[in-house]
Length: 113
Length: 116
Image (tube, rainbow over all chains, first blue to last red; front, side):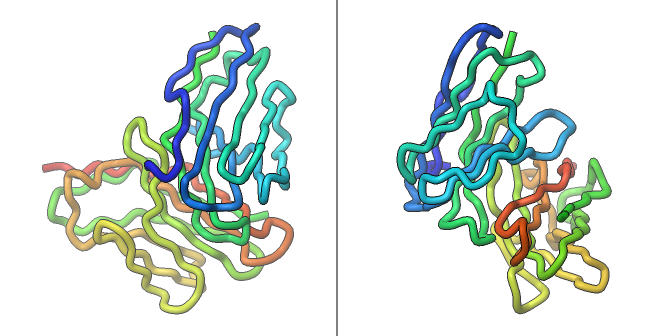
């Protein structure tokens, strides 16, 4: 898991707060992803970045705002979240978006109160 | 659209016995298939993949999986289970071509419990 790191590991925020999740990959990959993992549901792909460009937004509400300043870093900016947004947010990376395996970080456990 | 089904929410086996975690897929075109494992409070760890070639794929920690095109299945297997194999297992697929090229679609996961 040292290949992809995520901070913070745990976050509790109120519905009016603004916070950011950070992901960093040390694998030299060019593609990065955000996933949401909720209890009893399959992993949901949120965003895909390839060479810093967003290539997929899977109908994610605008209260989630991604940012990819370079191929090694990915952020997820959060504002005015809802309690149903509480979940484990996973970052992943892969060499490219051409169908190979992805490598995941440990996740950020988010609780919205 | 591509999809993955893991028909068993839970699988229980005794230590030392063989284990199988089932997965079926649906994609248009040739599939790429993956297995991941997730331990509590951890991210997903890549176990193995099928891209092309031999239908039997060997991966990490003694796991293997068999690609069966006629049955559209990619079951995960291990000849002798360990208690430490207890975890949540995900099957995933991506399309080798088409509009969802490279996009991973995951199954809902199967909890594997290995009893001492």
